[in-house]
Amino acid sequence: MRVLLIDDEKELVTTLSERLELRGIDNDWATSGEAGLELARKQAYDCVVVDLKMPGLGGLDTIRAIRQEQPDTRVIILTGHSAGEEMEGAQDLGTYRYLVKPVDIEDLLNLMQD
Image (cartoon, rainbow, N blue to C red; front, top):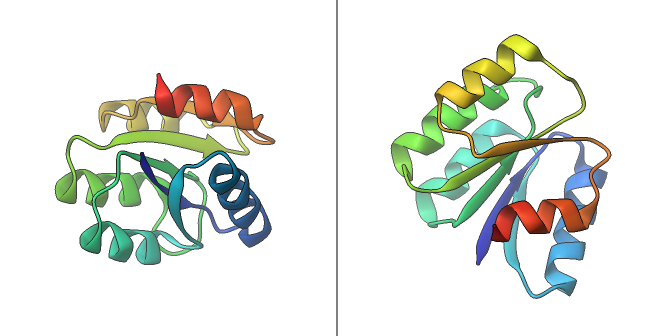
């Protein structure tokens, strides 16, 4: 499994990356939607974990762009907010599921491997 993590909170995304690596899951990470999209243009991912609220290219626009590059990739939203309207928009884009921060790594792994 190859995973892409996109979140503007560098400490969170690097910690998740380390924990996934410890469990044998290859991953890349980015701290902006733009950087994540650039990675998605170079590498196919089985799963992308995206924060909704990011400066610049926000989560919904990032998901929309990744869907154009990799329409079959599973997308999981990791958010610090329970943004009802944005969540509806994310579901319309085929988002698999969402988790609220702080995330339990086992819950995230279960969704990735479900």
